[in-house]
Length: 161
Image 1 (cartoon, rainbow, N blue to C red):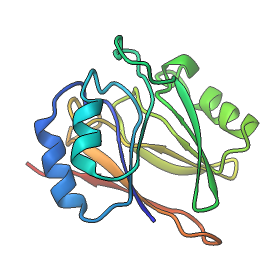
Image 2 (image 1 turned 60 degrees about the vertical axis):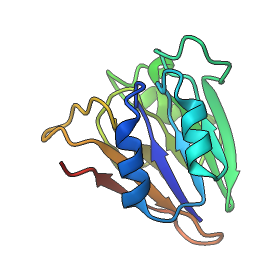
Image 3 (image 1 turned 180 degrees about the vertical axis):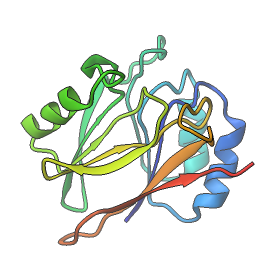
């Protein structure tokens, strides 16, 4: 199963079409918050199961702040991250993931992509499609490949100008 992970799109929806084209086939779309009302657009365009959480700028959504998913035998903790102070440190969101027995933690908010193993968990931040903050400032997303009984594989992808 291939999962396309995005975050912090802030209603800047034009680049999403480029991501869908560049990412190729995916089975699930995950949005880690701050869609700012574009959730319906993503759900309509993706044509796959779609999971998302509310970010600090998602004022008019009924989406939860945290979500737990099980996909291909992997337990996923999804949050935007602002309630866990991820702009200062990842430690709170990692601890929360461990408390929830997650195999994978996905968060956003910082607008900086990250993909690493911490305390036995895969910790992913897709960065931002709208307002990237990492050096080079290219919009970013993550492709996550899950297969039951195998180690998850994730990679950060960048949208070239």
